[in-house]
Length: 247
Image (tube, rainbow, N blue to C red):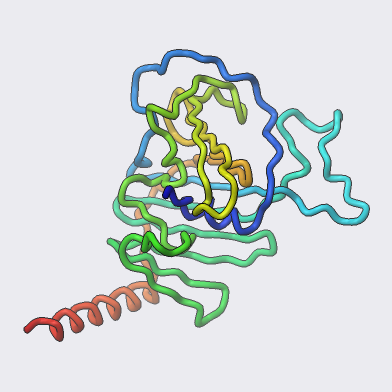
């Protein structure tokens, strides 16, 4: 059974429905030459993923879209989490910020992901790919196949055409998935920039992720001493455990 990827999985727990984004109809055009998607960002790159879900109505709330709303703006949606990823070479640092300002920063070093939470002693370590039998975690993202794992629905068989969406001309890919078989299947749509072949958006019917690529960093990432210490201690622990298991 197909699992939801980390951010989509997190959003599934937070949202129930999603109004379609305002966009042009899909044109059933032949697939242009080139890759379906750039599975890797450039060696020096920085991008922001904004995750939105349906806004919970409150007394006196006027969040519904209206004729006066700017094109493409959906006032029924609210930001759930903003994730900024900075990559320099083999290093990544991922910063997640909630609407109330709570921040988690995850350093991705080799096969280890070290997350520092909002508290002074909030630290967690993940090593290797997430176990397939556990719910996806936003603090342990599987980058083994792509820098954009939430776009894994981008395949040749899922291509449906070209559409102007989110102010870009996009390749569009559609499929149907069931979130771990818990609910009825829902439609999932991915949008890829025709020109750059970088992700534009991912819509699951219950969540919306939009991608924005910023100016790349000009200097390599510098790993903080706290992260270096956690990495070294975990490595020593792993080596010690391996020695103890050796007959």
